[in-house]
Amino acid sequence: MKKIFCVGDSWSHGYGVDQSKTWPAILNNYECFDVVNIGQSGSSNFAIADNVTKILKLDTTIDTIIVGWSGVTRYRHKGNDIDFSYAKNIELRDNFFKKKKLIDIENDFLGLNQQINELCKEQNVNLVKFSVFGDFKYLWDDFYTEDSFLEYL
Image (cartoon, rainbow, N blue to C red; front, top):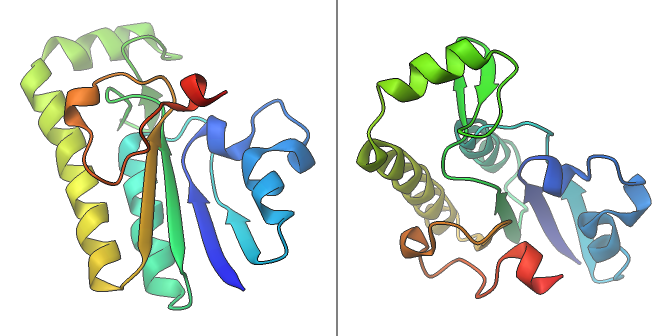
């Protein structure tokens, strides 16, 4: 049986969806897979990368990790999840992104992707990544699915 960990934000967690109908739960219906969903609604990209690091340190029996990203611009700052398009504290978001250049945001995202790639390679774990919305395709590496999650649906 193949052990698969699904990591990401609300799209992996299944926010607002009966847990038996999330895509990781549907994948788990196949008898050859043992799927663990550790997606967390509102996760920043840094939290997603941290989760991958943690599970690879805790479990050496993982065959595959599937990472879902819903945006290049997702950050955790001063205990708050912020994005270009959403933040509970709009002033905090505006001040944070006022100091960020697009190249810095892209480099942060690329660095997190590289970190995950290297960890999976070191531990001989298969890696699949997808973008929920299909944005910033020029930043995708060879581990990304050809289509975004929304294009697939």
